[in-house]
Length: 118
Image 1: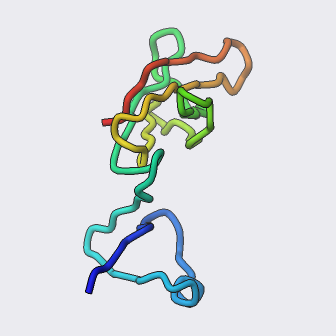
Image 2: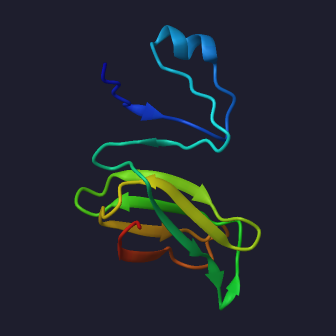
């Protein structure tokens, strides 16, 4: 018997187990859970960075990651108190660009192009 896993979810929310089971999802309880949807844009890759303003860490800053080929928004996060941010669940090797926006509108958005998740 072969088992095909299409989607795996974890962390950051309380799942509705009844609804998942009704949709025929298999619920596996792991000690260290993982999350990913293995497809063209989602996988085991990560992009990490730090938001800075005039050389000092700056937060909270909205940060977005886009596919480079079609400019599709993949994820949006806000940087943590130390200015760090992480995008998870991105396909390894997918060419992306990252845009950070100044929440006070004092500075233009900053873009980092040709970012490749590892």
